[in-house]
Image 1 (cartoon, protein in one colour):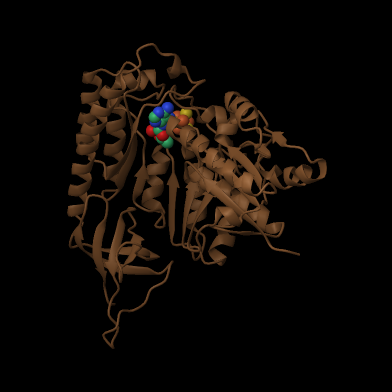
Image 2 (tube, helix red, strand yellow):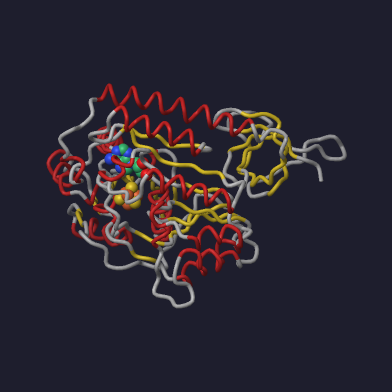
Length: 450
Ligand code: 5AD
Ligand code: SF4
């Protein structure tokens, strides 16, 4: 039989990247092979994100381009899935303006793709199937992992927090946790196939609560996974500050595989804004938490997410954010302009901030954040770090690239062998690298000969 190809375009967060690995696995199980050339595809999937308006716009822009592909190749099956599909107004738009799309499915029925493909062929009719709620966790789905040396591992799905700006609780549903034995089995399998580093994924890993007496919470899960032989590094994201427990801080001390880095989204430095965001902590509580983390793990790197221009944010509120950034001294921060999300409470707030004010604050915030990142990186110069090699640098010929335990990107020269030639490295090698210089977003170094 003639080889059939699939192409997957993924927008958004790590959860979506992980979901796309499952989509790829299911298609490969049915004999399809991946192509990086859209024109060669027989099945083309777009896994969408709805966290900010930009992602919506990009999706519809891309669909416009794909329509042309489909006109040239009518047999092409176009499928759309992911967070945007969990919103009725998006489904309505697809029905009215993009009715040529063959398959529509959502976050809760990802595993139904093979069946929907079969139905499409058998019934010769478009398949639109979105489940409004999840029906439990599907275990045992195949996956084609993006990397051989590091992997994302879901530990929980959904979110119950309802931050007032956020669409995720509506698109990903309520919290549910995977059983620890399923996670352990997956991690052991990954390690057996050569994976060195895992990143545990959940909208809020601190709410991990499986029905298990032995492993009742997230710190207990970390301890369990820390015991997996052959595994080198454990990371996780994301962690809500209001739920970060003493148990987790203790886990950093006890679990040597847990990397000294935490992504701890603050969103705003103004307690008044935090209240309206329904974050359920104050600026002071957050700063106190950072202090406790740093006391327990002095070398911990802290990164964050910050939104500027949330409805009602005053100049004073914004100055509180700048003040918090200066106090916490983040290693890095993702900064976002507040984006109205239909269906969320904040979309209805009357005091929306004008775009130019948002942009002006955004620029000031980015400058503050970058100055601190650059300084933090500068302080690493002269230190020697274990680096997990991610292969050759794409930008600098002759250099390799990787991450330090505290998640800093480093480009480095390989060490020289006895013959004076560079010792070749491959993805997944752990090497000691001396940091020789620094930039705002990355480090530069040279591998050390042992
Ligand atoms: N507008 C801007 N940023 C948002 N985020 C989530 N929702 C919105 C929104 N409506 C940001 C938050 C979150 C990150 C993943 O995306 O900072 O932590
Ligand atoms: Fe969105 Fe808040 Fe849940 Fe994070 S914790 S996914 S920001 S609702």
